[in-house]
Length: 148
Image (cartoon, rainbow, N blue to C red):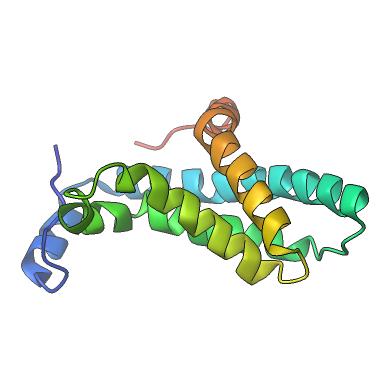
């Protein structure tokens, strides 16, 4: 099991983490990141279009992929693991922080949404990203040949 360094500036620990895996791990992580971004972006566009039609707020769907990519980079590359020693003492913060990140990114990338609608889209997509997106990404990953 790979442990995340508890200090952001411990470059030896970060280097040890980066070199502890084979190249196939990093290729698989990159493919997973790309697929999760594409699938998540499509799902987010669908959710935003529903909100756009319902509440008559124009939304630029191109920002959906960028928002999903930023969240995937935060979660897949272990940034939450770096923050774990600092946020672990606060109860439920590990569950609330990704939700807050989603809400903030939805509002940042889709400024034309009202804050109430950004919160609603953030909560809906946060729940979908827990259940449906890993399942969909896993199904698509099954059709990609493995390396090594």
